[in-house]
Structures are given as structure tokens and as C-alpha cells.
Length: 513
Ligand code: ATP
View 1 (cartoon, helix red, strand yellow):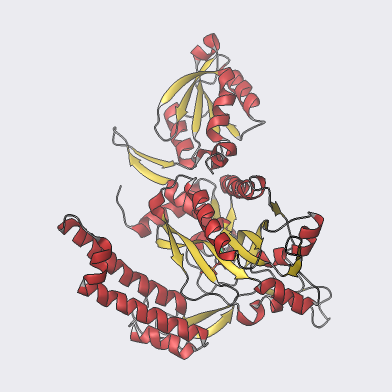
View 2 (tube, protein in one colour):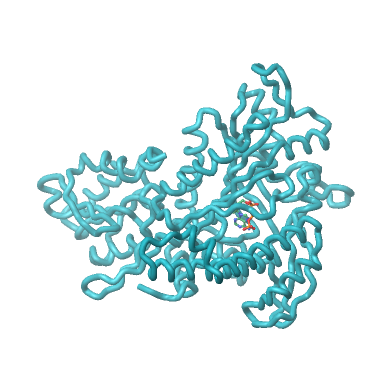
């Protein structure tokens, strides 16, 4: 069914509320901006995604271990990491709409629009010429060259402006590119200002001074400050990784894209400690491994692309994003960064403690380099939810809404339906639930026609429905119905456990890696 992307996105948002996936936080008090709660199905899906990531990192890699550090940390950590001084976003307001934007995002979106124009030229030419050579076309076509030159110029001005901290130049780029406010359509912009994204609070008795602490804006620093504890107690040898999942908090300027950009969110990060000089090889390795992990979810290769950073963060010597095609376009899903020895060196300096590794082979001590993989659990949730949501028109003209979630991640794995509420069918259904519930989340549904029950489970994304009918009493078989194809087959009850193990266990996904 073709519909406008914004309508499609609205449908996903209302569907996720209707089926217990995501609720606006504090809804009965009119909500809290950019903060969301996960409902009964959302919490399960989120837990399964987290678990899949954790197992892929920690269980499948002998040299990666996981930790769980606190949200509150010593305030000097954020001084050392550079967050107190530099964790800023450049903000700009439109004087007519009174809407606030991130200046960098406005410029990046402008560049993306020019890139789209190039893509269109390429597509047009592809249709026109046989034996089309795309590289040749890009380098020789006048219009494409003009667009490309414009992109290069904006990128280079933008990179220099950010490097020099020249906010007037950032504004000038917006003016020169004639970027308009998407709401008011006007070019009436304020100056660009820096805005620190960290939330602060105080610890201990309120009257004391100097007790300001921050809610962590990333989980990574909890890994860095525990690097030596883990290395020593786990007798870890380079290269090795430390993984962690947990909440992070950012006072985001623009928070208008549902769970894509939240002020309280969850990250899943892994810092991989390596010998200096080998970081580029590991950076490439983790780029490839992380893409493979995303692809194993089966959401389609065409939905992912790499984006190499134009401007590197203060700590990085290489950085790329894995972007996903969200309903509002390709956007960052995960970051892979080569962070050099920046963080550990800073913590050495600010704490006065050595954070070195003794390399027995080379007989020297050094501060390891770090390659980081950092993905937002909520963004991952949105990528899975939005690409699984389908509105299908059936042969009888009815619309079927189905969430074709990867079965291993679905909140409910099986719904068991007694065909009627009598003749011992509910009792047999309960026996089946008892048989499966130790391994999977199983639900029993007795209300309405079987057709309606199918629709309900399709909308929740339950991969299998089992119907218990009168034949089941005679030959111990049940009907198993597949969510995506709607095909049915009869299976012996004692074969159900094995069947589900193969189809819906996390192991089935992990084996693809
Ligand atoms: P963006 O450019 O979109 O603000 P970022 O580059 O600041 O993201 P990182 O600091 O690299 O993001 O954080 C790593 C990951 O954490 C991101 O790839 C994203 O998936 C997730 N993330 C970051 N900020 C948010 C947020 N406000 N809400 C939800 N997820 C987030």
C-alpha cells in the first residue's frame, strides 16, 4: 500500500501505542517531551534485542567481556573525557516559527538533498544507456560535477568552521545555502550558539558546594574507567573488548522524531582495546562485523549504508556510521569509531593513575588504542519496528496489519487458540502452554473467531499461532500457522518444542553470524 512517508510513520507510532509497544512518558500529565515508556510488548522486544547484541558480543567472542557500570560517576570523568567543555551541539532558532534546530543537521540535510539530485541523474542515465558505467558517468557528467562541487565546498567550509569553533561561519553557510525553516519556510535565523547536552544534578546534602554530578551522556566512559580493573581481574590480553548496555541521557535540542532521538535512551557499546598501530585493521574488522550483525536480522541489505564522518570528533582518527533507512530517510543507527588512546590518556592525566598495558611479547608498557562500536537500543528498536510494519491487502479485500518481526526477537513467540471454549479444548491448550512456557513467552487466546485472533497476533507480531481443535483430541496434532505466509501445517504436539527451538530461539540468529 503506497502512502506518504509521514503518514506511514504516524501509523507506526499509533500502532505501537495500540499494541502495547511504546507509550508517551507521563501521558496522563500530557507527556514529557522526548521521553518514552516501553509497554508490555515493547519491553519484551527491547529485552530480546539487547540480549541478541549481548550474546553476539560477549558469548560468541572469547576475548570480550561485559560489565554494568553506574550511571553516576565522578564528575571529573566528564572533564577528562571532554564532555564538560565540548559535548555541545550548535543550535539555531527560526525567528518566525520559534522552532529550534541543530545547525549541523540543517546543513547535513541540505547536503543530503543535493546527493539525492545526483542519485536521480544517475538513475535517469541508467535507464537511458545500455552498458551504463556509473563511475564514468559521475566523473564526466556536467550537472553531476556541479552538484558534487557544491557538496565538497559546503563540507569543507563546514568542517573548517567546526574545527575553528567559528559559529558565525556556520550561520553564514546556512545563509549562503539559502536553507529555509521546514515549518515557516522562512530564512529568518538567529545566530548559532553552542549548547551543552549534559544533564546535571547534585549528590549528597543540597547545601554542600561542589557536589554537581552529571547523568552520563554515554556508557563508554564507564568502560574506560574500569579498563584496568577488568584487564587485571580477567587477565585479559590485547586485543580484548569490554561491552556494556545501559541508560544514557542527553538534553537534545531537537526531539521530534519519536524514539529516534530521546532525552533518556539506552546504548549498547563495546570498547575494543588494541595495540597501537593495529587500530585501523580492527576498525575495518568491526565495521564489517557490525554490519553483518544488522544484516542477520533480515530487514534487507538495501536499508543499510555506511557514512564516513567528514568532521571527526575530538577523540577519533577514523569514524563511520551505519545508517538505516528509517521512514524519514537514511539516518545514523550505529557509530564505529577509532578513538585512539585519547580517553585512557586523559583519565591517566586527570586521575594521576597509570592505565597502561604490559605487552609481554614486546616487553614494553603502553596505553592501548581503542575501537568502539556504539549503537542505540531504541534506534535499533525503531529500525526493526518500522521495517517490520506492513499493511497488506488480502485476496478478500480486507487489510491485514502485520509486524513481521524477526521471530527470535518477537515479544510473544506463540499464541495458542482452543478452537472452541468447550469439549476439553481449553484444557489441552493449557497443557501445550505449560509444555512450552519454560523456553518461550506463550499466550493463550480464547476470545473471538480464529480469524480475529490471527489478526490480533499478526498486529503484535507473534510468529506462530497454534490452534487446538477436535482432531487434536484424537491424534495429538495441532495446526501451526505461520504469520508471514499465513500457511498452515499440522504438527504432533510432541514435535512443537523442537520446531520452536529451530524457528524462534536466539540461537537461530546467532548461528547466522
Ligand atoms: P546523532 O548525530 O544522531 O545525535 P551521535 O553521533 O551523537 O548521534 P553517538 O554519540 O555516536 O551519537 O551515540 C551512539 C549511538 O547512540 C547513536 O548511533 C544512536 O544510535 C544512539 N543515540 C545517540 N543519541 C541518541 C538519542 N538522543 N536518542 C536515541 N539514541 C541515541
